[in-house]
Length: 453
Ligand code: ARG
Image 1 (cartoon, helix red, strand yellow):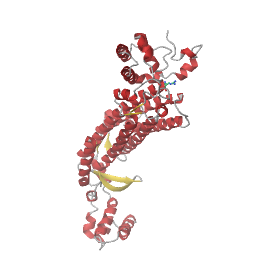
Image 2 (cartoon, rainbow, N blue to C red):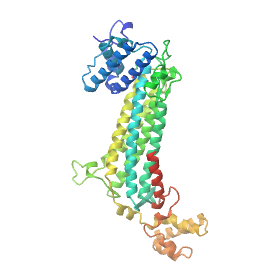
Image 3 (cartoon, rainbow, N blue to C red):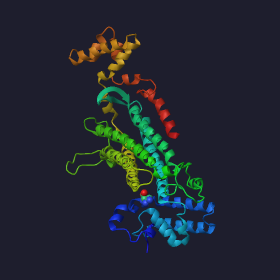
Image 4 (cartoon, rainbow, N blue to C red):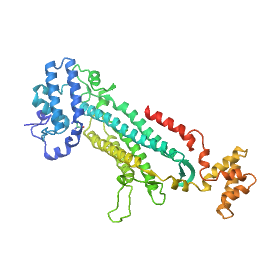
């Protein structure tokens, strides 16, 4: 018959309503590997400091192996009083080996759960980093293959200046690079052990927190036991990093939706990465891109929800903090699925470079280059802007095509008018990080180096 971990102090068992609200096993069993790894490290440390004999240690380690195998294979018999994964593992280890009753020496579920979640988060970060890299490589491959293709660049979603397609694709790649950097940074603060903080105040036993930290591959150890068990900054930071990543994926999604529309026609989606309509036979819908856009809302919700949970909590551990896991798990799952699907959609996208070029062909899109052409010949930019602006106004008023008006102007003439030919202006913005294919060649090198780092 199993009982609660705290049955000694209580006359009766827990009510059903309490169990239903309180139990975290349904979601925290997902951390069983981390919980078992934490217990292995703790038991090894206890033996190192003389609180376990070697025989006890080896017995408990063997029982932990059995438990891990049972959970992995689905044969583990979870019981009603297993309120969380920590309880379940300890209960079963003790059934297998009575020395399991010593396993919780100098440990509380407060330092245990924080340690488990840090281990879980550390590997989740590594997984997300791999998936980000994968999408970045897909963008890079398309950028390399884009050659001299160009499209209108936009501000206010109004055609602004033509840019190389490779330039546009890598813009998303650089945003993802910052997301990766943020996760790498959050990983440093995640990779800190809190095992040994106890319930909140450390221990009167001769524990060695640095030892258990080393067994678990943590880079650092808590400095203050109260902060150790109360700190969930790493969860909030990762939720933020994933939310901003989600925002970037949403923005990519939004562009793909626009580009796949009949009105833009810049891309064609692969059938395997688009959906149809139940009623309208002609439809092909960019559902992946829409979900990438939609999922960002959910990620931001997890971040704001969890910050709200944390905001008024007094030191140290409070049961409110059990609310850390579901949003974190869901955010990681959501980002993982979105990155994978978006990568599939983008890697199989066909770019309709003729449609892009046709949209970028408007001579108006070269107006800025025309003004810069005048600047290069000594005119102050404000005056150059006015000269070109006047041509644009007259062309729009129907006094002639922009090309004719430019060619007829003594300050401009035929050489300047040649800039308005399709595909010419895009080649001219060759400054570092600029939008011409020549400048992008350089950028591609830097992007590749960053990815390989
Ligand atoms: N299931 C709990 C959680 O996820 C574990 C810690 C419980 N600690 C306690 N003092 N009741 O936060």
